[in-house]
Amino acid sequence: MSRPSPDHRPSTTPSGRPRPSVPGSGLAKGLAVTLRTMTKKTVTEQYPDALPDLPPRTRGVIGLFEENCTVCMLCARECPDWCIYIDSHKETIPAATPGGRERSRNVLDRFAIDFSLCMYCGICIEVCPFDALFWSPEFEYAETDIRDLTHERDKLREWMWTVPAPPALDPGAEEPKEIAAARKTAEKLAAAQAEPTEPKAQAEPTDPKEGEGQS
Ligand code: SF4
Ligand code: SF4
Picture 1 (cartoon, rainbow, N blue to C red):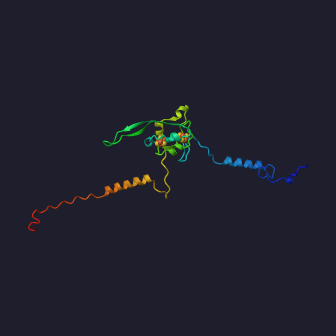
Picture 2 (cartoon, rainbow, N blue to C red):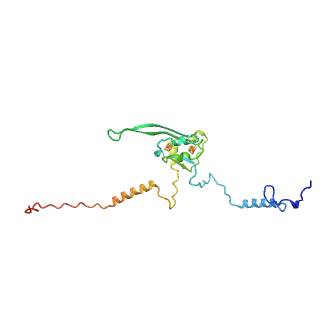
């Protein structure tokens, strides 16, 4: 079987790339790319000397706003890693009015997240119906002892103060219901305070003689 002459070789390689027409041109192209890259500005982050400029929705750590938590346990049930630990007890609230009914409420005893197990999926934050959990972009909490990666309630609260403010709404977006309700209440109060208080008209003394002789 005769070999095909070099002049009749296909113009592309088996991988689909064009065959180099001049011997050594591939090497020259490779060197050109190397030179271009060498002269480009470096993009290496100088961490920890310079902190990275992180996007606002970075998933660094989870903060707990305890006042909003009703101990509904939804986050702990939905967490795929089972790394949220919640303990609570019930407390009875006396009736507000005589003859009324006593009520009970859940009191939080422990809320902890084990960040050595957490996979930062954000499900707990999504499912919380009371806005008690938030993402913070803080990420510098590496520990030498893995047990220290379980953050208890006090530490989770501390992270809350590092949660960035929500981004501004689009100019054409509808006003959130909560803000609209608060604004209306504030406007009503301001209007009530601004109303001038008219002095009560003094009742004119009635003349006891008035009407005499008419009967
Ligand atoms: S981010 Fe995901 S894995 Fe981490 S605590 Fe929340 S639900 Fe669990
Ligand atoms: S889902 Fe929200 S309110 Fe319910 S226990 Fe978790 S943090 Fe608290």
